[in-house]
Amino acid sequence: WVFVGQQCKKFSISPVNYEFEVHAMSAEKLPFILPAVFTIGPKITAAGGEESDRKDLQAQLLLYSKLIAPLHSSRSHVQELVKGIIEGETRVLAAELTMEEIFKGTKTFKEKVFNRVQLELNQFGLIIYNANVKQLVDVPGHEYFSYLGQKTQQDAANQAKVDVAEARMKGEVGAKEREGLTRQNAAKVDAETKVLSVRQQGQGLKEEAKVKAEVQVFENERAAEIAAAKAELAMKKAGWDKQAEVEAAKAVAIREAELQMEVERKNAMRQTEKLKAEQLSKATVHYDTQVQESNAQLYSRQNRRRRRQSCLSR
Image 1 (cartoon, one colour):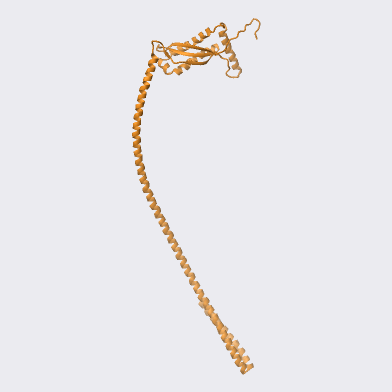
Image 2 (cartoon, rainbow, N blue to C red; image 1 turned 135 degrees about the horizontal axis):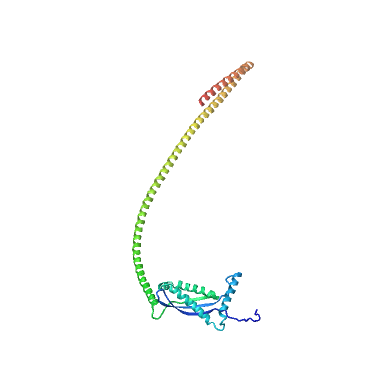
């Protein structure tokens, strides 16, 4: 809002490119030129969404508006201000360093210039959006950077020659070392192969002897088992033969007894017929008596034979 008695003016917040060639001197009083292009403008974005960040952004815009308000139609004073800050900070920083330090640490030197300039611009609400510091240039009549560049190139060329020579030497030495190592390794492999071959032959002979011994032991055990089986079979056969003989003797004895009984029976029958012819009643009595005596005798003989057979079996 614009109140009565107030004025409202609009101004651009677009960043502006500022191109300079800063003349500075090193600690040895050697002059040089630093070409640079800075893109600078007001800070229009907050770092975060906090209330403090928004307030800081408003404060920065207020500082920038105060900077351009007096001469709104022309921004030459802003350019002079920026140029003065960049030249001043660059000269102060260059005066603290030697020319060799500036040349070797160009990137670090540029970063320090950027940081110092930004620190001074903060008080005017300005921010560096981009900075392109070009290669350092000699002042006419002073060719330090040119000579230093030539020296660097020459040193690099000489160093390259040295590196090539060293590389060639290392290559030749390495080739000789590799050849020597190859021969050593080949001899070592041959020796180890021979040792391994002898060990394998010895191991083979040991295994062969072990197998033969095991086979001999097995054959001996097998022969012993066969001999034991044959002996046991012979004993069984002997027992079987003896038992067969005993059984045969028993059968013969029984058959003889049966035949004897048959003979005696027939004799008794003939005797009985004879007695019947002579005297039926006397013969009958006599027959019965004789039959009983014969049976008794037969029984007695059978008992004696059985006892003899029992003794033979024992």
